[in-house]
Length: 218
Image (cartoon, rainbow, N blue to C red; front, side, top):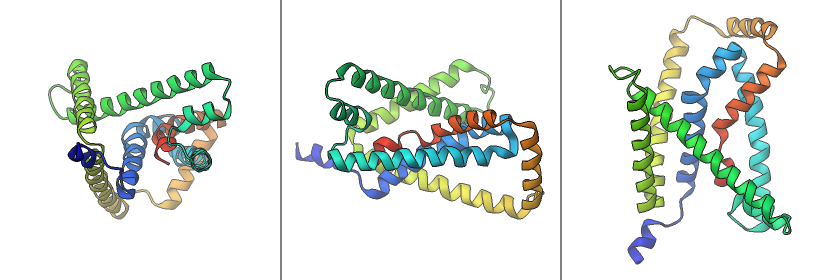
């Protein structure tokens, strides 16, 4: 029993930051970025900033609610304690949140599997892609069952390694890229002439997937 408790002790600050960053990088760069660029081009950073501002407001609200109620149940628990006579609404919100997390998890796993087999002969085989995605979810589910803290350590190593690699790639591209900052701003104004505010807001809502989970990680 003691060993079990040690395996499942509370996550530390570095592990929690890694889990949050992992979702943001995976959802924002590897999953949503291509869709966003195809829709509004050089205006994508604007949409990401809008999504980030909305996410920061949500995170602040959840922090204040968590401190006020001293509860880790997030949206479902906060709503239930605020509106104590609305059990059905609280339940509906809870199930919507679960569905949202499952959908986001599936999106991340499916994108990972697409990257994993992109350079192989099976790149266009949708069933192999689905099988890999299911396998990835299964592996991490087993790790979480065995040890939440162990999952945090693995996330810590994976995310910070990923950030280092992305930083190196960014530096190389900045040094050898063919588009300077002035040209980027010019292209941004050009795309603004062909994009509507509605399109930017749609992409902002899509990029909000990158900030999924801030409410439970605060």
